[in-house]
Image (cartoon, rainbow, N blue to C red; front, side, top):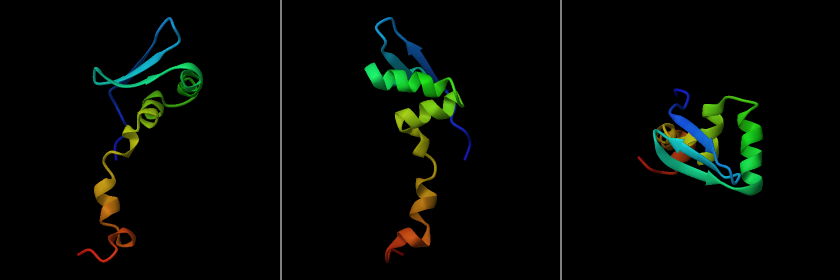
Length: 76
């Protein structure tokens, strides 16, 4: 799986953080959540942090997980 790409964020004057993915809004954070996000994005891989905060980190591996024997539960 390739690392996430195409994320960016904008911190507005009122403290709101808007996370975008390829130019489209993917999430808006306010208050304490915005502060936690800003602290985390400064200390790690920014693309991965933004993907995790928006929930986009899952995409790409669902098919592999569905086909795993543990997750089949009688399906063929």
